[in-house]
Amino acid sequence: LNSKINHYLEFYSMKFSRFAAMALTLGVATGANADWSQIQNEAKGQTVYFNAWGGGDAINAYIAWAAQEAKSRYGVEVRHVKITDAAEVVKRVQTEVSAGRKTDGSVDLMWVNGENFRNLKNGGLLFGPWAQNLPNWGLVDLNKPVRTDFSVPTEGFEAPWGTAQLTFIADSAKTPTPPRSAAQLLAFAKANSGRVSYPKPPDFHGTTFVKQLLIDLTPNPVVLQQTVTPAAFASATQPLWAYLDQLHPSLWRGGKTFAASAAEMHRMLGDGELKLSITFNPNEAANLIASKQLPATAYSFGFGGGTIGNVHFVAIPVNARAKAGSQVFANFLLSAEAQTRKADISVWGDGTVLDVAKLPAAAQATMRKTAAGALAEAVPTLPEPHASWVEALEAEWLKRYGAR
Image (tube, rainbow, N blue to C red; front, side, top):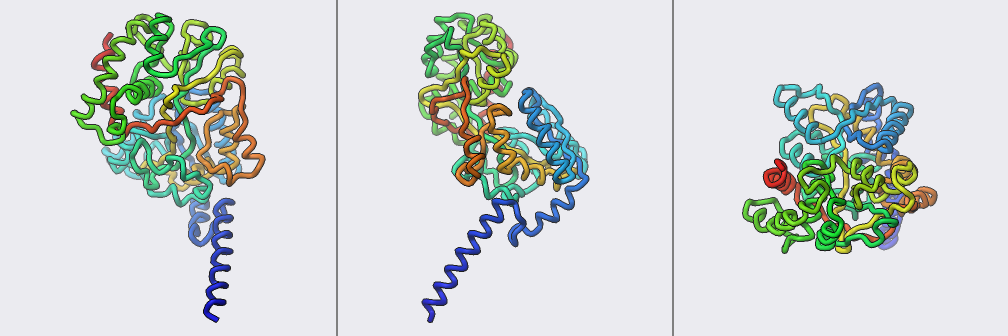
């Protein structure tokens, strides 16, 4: 009798687990998620000021679409506050909280990761934890680095939004054989004097390029995953500075000035002024070809040993006015529909944070679409250094090269 009872208990336990998982996938409020309907009701009529990078037409168009959907489906007004540097948003939140503006902050939701997340979290400036309570959290691929951000545990204080990886772009008509390592890049720059550049840190792409070189050149990359110390910094970065001292004289304008941004590098590549450009979206070259900003012969590539990749997130400041509306919008951004549209190369081409195997067949097909110019090769993904390395690297780079 006991064995039969145990059998039935096990059977119905499995049934309930499957039902709960299905309900979570569909975004249905289960017992564990019973207050989600209350959050949705509270969100109606709220205005979410979403501070997000505004430097890409495809990104801006996607956010506009998502905002329209949030308004029609949930009654949440989303206004895209276009920014150029998330660090400035962090400073604004810090200033508001310090001035006693505890509940009516100007930022409701922000696109963030890395040192900016670390600074917000360490300063107690984030609302949460909330991310793992979102109904669509059940779709997230937990094999991706969605629970750490530049080696800093997220602990539910930010929700993953997309994935990215440093990618180089060239034109096969002019550069049929690209450099595949830091050493090869140095030789390439010397052989093509004045035709290579990178954005000046603290520009995001410029800092990422410097971090990539650091990982490639440092004798012990493991130390980069730990909080930076003066001794570790001096030892790990010595090969980087020696390398840049050799590289800069061969750069565009002799390394005395740098490309303004990755977008400017794309234009210079298209004009033939540069031989290489960089992006943090492996599909961006395909979009640039489609919009006639790059020739059809453009292609993407990576270093043989891998390139830096990470997850980008959205977070809610502790003094946000529309916390409920921000959670509802963040949950929509994690939906299969929104993630599939975002991953579509013809829309944006930003990598998904979802477990593709959990999605409908049509969504899986869209996720796996490729286009000419997009990164077609398998490039290993290297982890970002601990967030504490970023400010130290930028400060030292500016000290050494910023005044030239």
